[in-house]
Amino acid sequence: MPSSAQDLPLGHSADSETPIRSSVELGLVIREQRKRLALKQLDLAGLGNTGNRFIVDLENGKPTVQLQKVLDLMDLLGLEVVVRTKASRSTSSL
Image 1 (tube, rainbow, N blue to C red):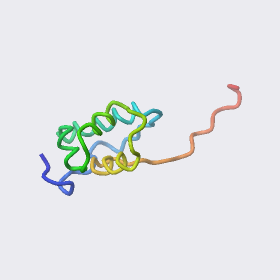
Image 2: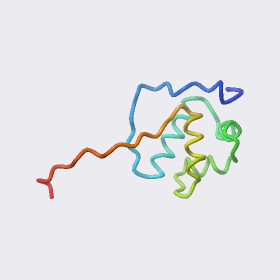
Image 3: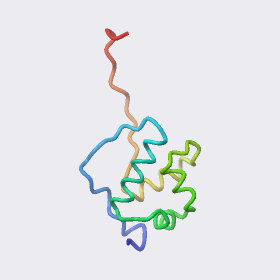
Image 4: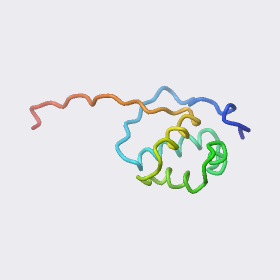
């Protein structure tokens, strides 16, 4: 187990992108990365200076978690948020 945030490896999965459309989807991505890094929820809570309840809520997709805490934990896990414009949809399907 890493002893500090500096010891955490950056995300080591292939440069994959996962579109997130709900808090549940975000929670699943965070849970998968935590498990890839062999961290328990309590480990992540300690490294992120937050409570275990916050980690549980986040991974379960609670929509009202604090955004800055989520971003900080994602950074610890080697994840980042990228905002981009959606690809335009064909007008013929309207």
